[in-house]
Amino acid sequence: MCYSAQIRADYTKLVREYGAVMSLDEFAQLYAHDAGKQRPKTPKAMDDGFAGARTPAGQDIVAKIQQWHAEEMQTLDDELRTQGARLKAAEDALAHRPTQKARNEVRIAGNRIERARARLEDLHRTSLLPRDSRIFPGVYAPVIVSEQGQRVIKPMRYQCRLAGKPARNDALYPGTYNARRDSLEAYWKNAFGHTHGVVVVQSFYEHVPRHAMEHRSLHAGEKAENVVLEFRSEPPRDLLIACLWSEWEGPDGRLLSFAAISDEPPVEVAAAGHDRCIVPIRPENLDAWLNPDPSDLAGLYRILDDREPVHLEYAESA
Image (cartoon, rainbow, N blue to C red):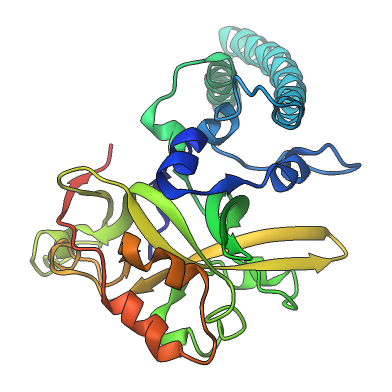
């Protein structure tokens, strides 16, 4: 299961290299400040991709993003003041009488101050770091789909809530950010053959048992330990990851979301100790994948079998 990936969020390159157009209306809806709406979880690279927008629609999205940032900065400033006072009170208590409670207060306040400062630094930072393009379940990413034969880029949440399913399924089935190939005609039948997309990634991450990565059994009394491995193609290149997506509507509003299809792993991923892998499709199969024929599921399976020939290397993630 691919629990995280480093996406391509450079809109100019996505448009130029993949012949797609931006669905600015969808991005505007995502960043809109509706009553009671929480700030959408978006990677910094996705937000900053609109910097320098020249069209009125693009500039409106920038203004919406800046409004979210301003509100978050105010919340973080309030948090710093609150936790600063908490830290001082705990340090004064420790100086008067050392107790475990006071030590815990110092630790908790210090950790929260550190997190708030780090987030403020990220919001102010203009240069991008690799982690700014990384997505996790629940985070939005730009997904390429097809509308009337035109490739379109839309923002979607990485964890698919199928149309007609209750919102509580997000918690009941947290693994729905990946769609297993062996369940495409079962749980995913209303999306497979109907609503396909791709997300462009540069690397992806997997949790792998350390003993499996080291090709050994657990020692007597040893507890299993997970490590995070980053898989990246060598030489570096973009990967078009096959996805299913859905448009959900309910009492909570409207949601566009997607899942990456996972299948048996290639040799390099299996050798690293992992038993599943997302599926990179060939660029020449992109339009056939984005415009599926529901009466020819066998043809869609052939696209998944005809994977982009890439060599994956891995390293333990910091």
